[in-house]
Length: 230
Image 1: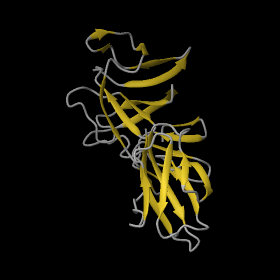
Image 2: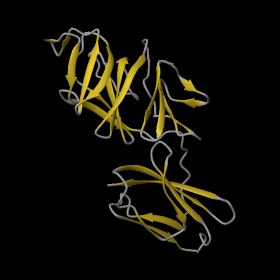
Image 3: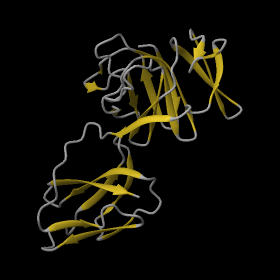
Image 4: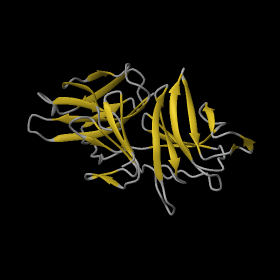
């Protein structure tokens, strides 16, 4: 374990590990006070040594710096990866070519300052300390859902529209959901909405991304499904 950082409502653990307790989340995981969260494939060391040296959040994006060549299955082939980011339920890597590892970053006047053993970025000479503006360009991004197995709603219970922009409708053809409860969780398992069952759910305040809707019937059967908020 390299470090611990509190960001918003979560306590993040980062460094060099494959599991935190029973949660599989290589090199980074988070704790809400009651539950552990993983971030998809995390920083994958295949086949080389990997470590996250530091993390910082800027504009709703969590940046990770360190020594790695693979983030949640993403790799740029030849370049040396030193920066990856998590935004919502999405990992991204960047096309910038560092000649050596990035070891630290700090938020200063709304700018990320990075430092480490590198002497040039993209062939341009730097003196181990530079501003980081999010990468010269985004190389690749992908999404993740962590720790959730999808169990589809029954044929008689349907969600629409999916993706949804403001309203998510739940059609209960046989009135199976009377006295049920409804919960919506985000990509890392945090509850963003909890209520008695309703057929029309206002999702307009949710950020863009992938969510899980959980419906617990009066008989304690739990139904799950994914939906996308646009």
